[in-house]
Length: 316
Image 1 (cartoon, rainbow, N blue to C red):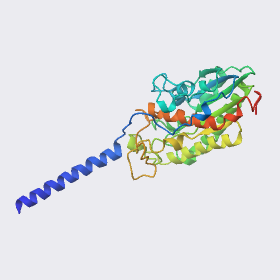
Image 2: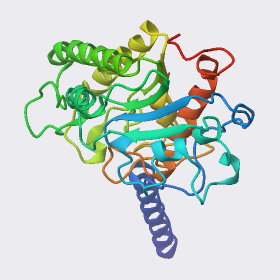
Image 3: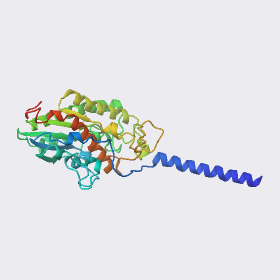
């Protein structure tokens, strides 16, 4: 009888240890996986030239567009322009240099910058382009407005972390004003026309809003404020024919700090891996791969706007 009790206790103890380890893994593990990431990009749209005109691919915004943490050729901006030497077979030929033979690039994005600074960057660093140049602008702006400086100081306009929704409402409207100013500036700097591909803001908590699980101070209203900022982005695109939302928020759900949580509705069975870098703010290289894919998908969907056979170079 004693042996049976001892065996039972050992079995239960082992089971409890197993369950504790499994819980810890599911709650805190962030495996990054390997290989390609993100949705498939059809090859057909990239098998013919979209335009022979001069095209400037312009990067505007924060560290996501600057490519922080990735190799020089593997940030999403670089991947959009040109396939790298180690490109995976399923993405070969799917880049802007394949469809714009006269493509030039300029990336004025700055790591750590906020939307307040993005207005200044455009005013100071982007010259008015010749009338025969078409602009393809890619932008990530607003994320740093929300997360800085992780609650180490009281919330303010360009560092909203920890704010209540009511505290944030004036800042949300200021962000709307700034974003519209940015879009106006881009139209002014590209008299020959431009299309802006504007990513909305992702959520490393996978919609749970539990920043504490990432080692950050609690932020009860964080998810709601993020949703308001994203609503501003979507409204700006709805108001302007040449602005297109790139769904970064939706695409990255299930690849944040809860990527292994199979019981959540954001769980991605096909790729249950972490697409963020060590700093939680930026993508890792698999995340950048996924990001360039959704940019390319949106560009292909909008390509009739800048194809030579449908547009003579004037603003649509």
